[in-house]
Image (cartoon, rainbow, N blue to C red; front, top):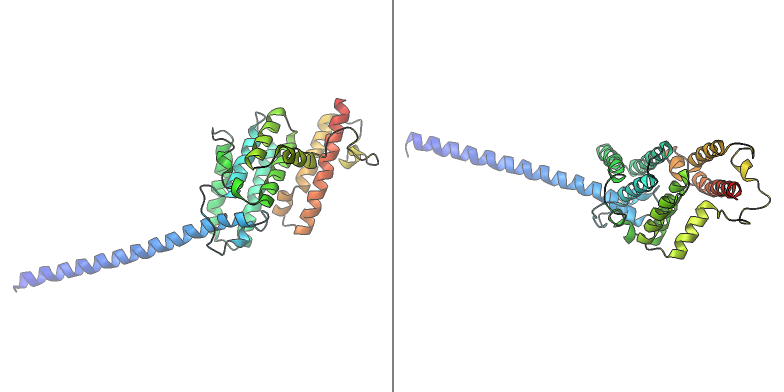
Length: 279
């Protein structure tokens, strides 16, 4: 073989070696990328097997969870956006609560030691989804596909959360209709939906409020106060005792449980005041 032929053979071998190295590096990068993606998806999927949002991401270590189009946390945020916009506008307190809910979810991921890069990516995704869902044309059913397949405890927890969220500005006819549609989509019966709404709002009917309690005192107001003052006090108390806000403040499960019980008293007092002023 001539010197020129040996030279070209040498060049071909070098090119083949380089190609093999490049393909090997690409394959390794692709495997790492798949692992990162599966890691993130699994963190979401684990929510389906948890009993609440606080520990939702503690279960992500296993890869057994199914991959869905949208995760439960994403659907919760999207439904909150739909509820917020149902009365025509999104109030400042509703924005704050959606933000607190997202922070609570991210805190769960952090506790589960999910990489910071994934937490930051999730944060951006959830805030973007909240802005998108409030104005898009997607239905309640579209944003409930994963939730409707979850166990009853998770579905009930989400529904209670959404009813409480809806009560921040009072349940208008449009908001109530959206809440009922969500309840039906989450596979609850008409009676179950009615009872759960009543539990959150405290009834709001004559004779339902304890005669030995003063609803104005419960909210830290006076009977002579204007309704706008009472409503402001109500919103402030709801935020302080809402589970998502408390969780975002780093409070433990015992304190959050007390806050949940306090929320029922606050809602019941507010509904009783509205009933008395409307009658």
